[in-house]
Image (tube, rainbow over all chains, first blue to last red; front, side, top):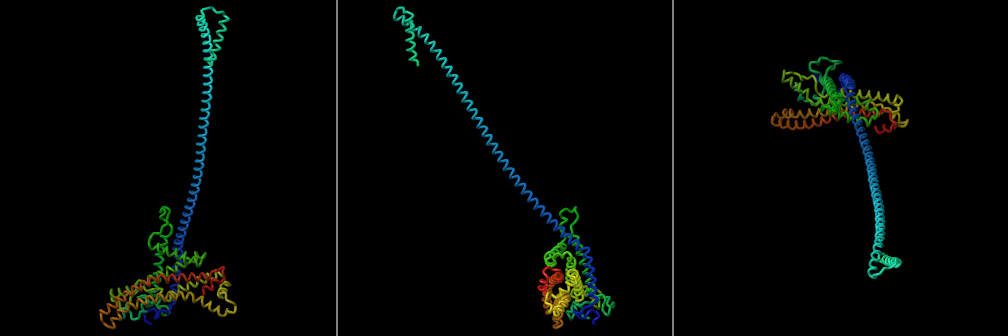
Length: 172
Length: 301
């Protein structure tokens, strides 16, 4: 055997090398199991957990936002309906008030008209009365002048009544 | 003495050698301290330090760091994180299921240990030491204290195979019990086939880890032998012709080829570490208690 070569053939298994390998690897394995893998695996798991938590939180937030939006939309819809109702009611009230005002006005107008008509009627009657008196006096004077004679009070009364009747027929 | 780098026999390039200065220390007539042993130890230390730094970077930092504490700092740490994550979620978990966390430390340790050995083997530490010794102090011998690919030593790969064998069998006994383990050996075959099945399955128990060891060893030996052969061509051309021009031409071609093969070797370094780890996972998985009794056994054989 060449003294500078530990084994002459690559398939020549050296038990010492084999044993050294087992010892070195087992020590490496135990050290790595204690100081390496718990940190790496723990780090990976914590990161995954963080990702999962964040995703869940985001999902939850999205759900809440959606619910809030639906709620707002419903409230908005309700508010719109309420506003519509209020406008309709206000319109109706205004219409009713206008209607009442109009009927009041008409009534007052009718009353005024009636009062005016009554006034006119009474004035007319008074005027006619005055006219009767004036006319009778005037007629007597005229008749006296024309006839140049005195007439009896019976004739006078008859003449006046005839003239009044004639006049009334003309006026009406 | 033939210079080591350009040894006549390319196999010498991958053979284990006693550490220079410790040739006289022997055990059972064999060198007690070899460069592969030292390389193995260095690989373990390097792997541990790198993984320890990565572990610090990967683990979640302190509260005051804010959201940055969830980020992994450092490129190497990120690579190790990605590899670990991939191995766990895409390789180990589909095979082992609920038992993943139990075996993850062992399987990842195995992968990174082999990978470090393979990668360190790609750096020509030994050739640098030999050259430096010859040029530095005119050393008469091929002076080197470490180097070479530890995983190109059958002793090393068998050692790893034995550890895997022990882990697999311990798990089998624990998971299946003695009866279940014995039942597993029959592979679900009818009773009259037992005389054939039992020896085959018993041999299979040992062949599986041995195959792991031989596969890794053979791949590493093949790659490094090929590199050694390529690097020898220049010297062979010079010896045959004595023509420097011709030697230079051969050297250029063989160097280009060696660079290409080195890239292949880099891939093989990762691939073989992965295969060793993955097959160990599969063997552990086969020895787990399954509800679909033996459906897996036939698929595996």
